[in-house]
Image 1 (tube, one colour):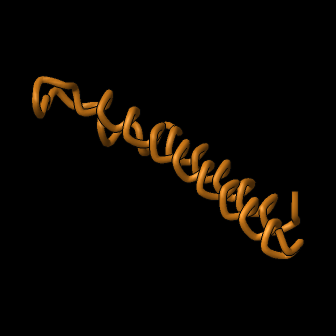
Image 2: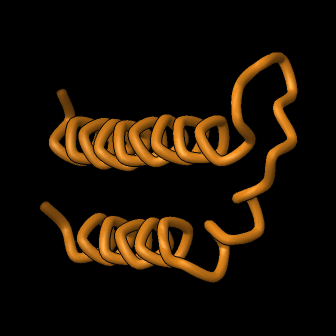
Length: 72
């Protein structure tokens, strides 16, 4: 793993920790239910999915750059 990839994953981890922390979670702890789903639950699932997709994109771009630099 390159240093740039490690830095991106570290930054993503810190962002995830901030997004799953109390001050932001309290913004979504309401009784409002768009589509019958509590807002907090929807927020948690959307952020969770976004972090998984971002991790996949970081690893994919790292893998692609390694293949192109090796000529294969």
